[in-house]
Image 1 (tube, helix red, strand yellow):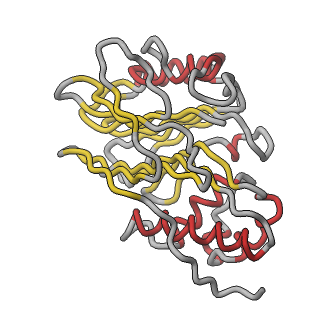
Image 2 (spheres, rainbow, N blue to C red):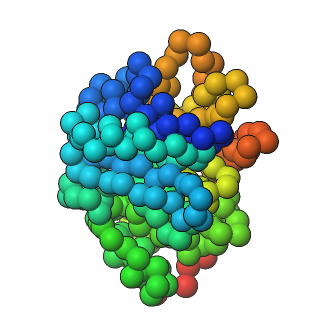
Image 3 (cartoon, rainbow, N blue to C red):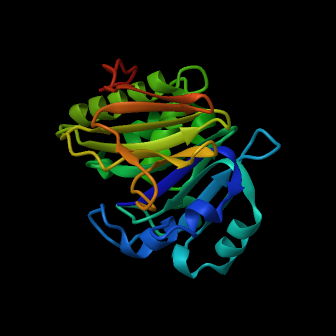
Length: 266
């Protein structure tokens, strides 16, 4: 699966999370410690927020450790909110359009996980999207489609509810297709002001998720794997949890998929 990191706080250089720490995201792209596969070399990406509402976005298919442009941008760009991701594909071609983050308006999204049996339910899930959201699809991954489902399920006004309804939709479509529902969901997403994250799995073995202070009085991070255990305290987020992080603090509450009521034939 994948590794990712998100930051909220005072503006710092992107490299301070992506490349500089001893177990940075770049290091995790070749030697992750808490993932099924230690190598995450099927592309990378970063979305960062600045003076405009919509995030900047840079994605490519090279391994993060070998991209000189990523290193250069990380040394020059400062941001008070950014999301970065290194990909280990569980489905979908290695292409720029399949690299995270995915963006819709002000919102950006990164994911580590998988929809089980996705190839058997992809079409039904796509058919449940409104036309304008279907037209936003760029790639072929389950991660991007889940994000578009969230947008359609009210992400702008109700982030928790949108994830819950999207997860419920995936599980219900799986049942209708005669598939045992299987969803692993460890994701982060933001509108440029607030940072949200979720950790959930139908088998109670969700990919890992941690929060921690970047530095006292500077900012906080949500990560799939700690990038530096020296001098920082990391808190593992429990299974079935939803995290909301603002500049004023962090809250955690239980998460569960909503009971889906689908207006579909079948």
